[in-house]
Image (cartoon, rainbow, N blue to C red):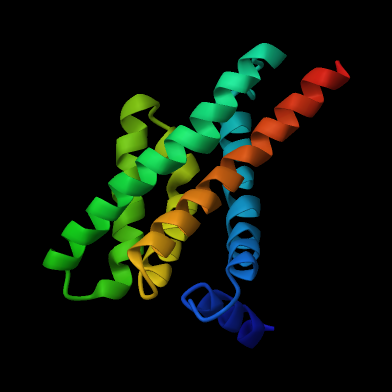
Length: 164
């Protein structure tokens, strides 16, 4: 089993696979951890999921699934570019990038950095991996991965709001 997990993890550094397969694998690594941490933090702090109206979900969709992935992927690309100029061990670039992104998110909401750290490890790894092919593929796949990551809770909110 450990060999399969190692092989699976290594596949996240392989840009010689179908992009859709890569996105599926990345989401499989990202979502369970990210949402478990989010639920754990909600439980520990006594907070819950936001309860936007169905009308607000349209605006949230644009913000979380279009604007944020594009802007944050662009910012992350700059962070990665800068880190590569200073770090000799480039295999740590995704981890340091995720720490920086978590710190920036924590400026808006203190525990948010903890909640999004793992996701940004995966987003950064995606960017670094696909940058081997091209900057456009790195940017595009990372933004799509980020958008899909944000889409899941929006769909859950939409379904829960429609059901109630």
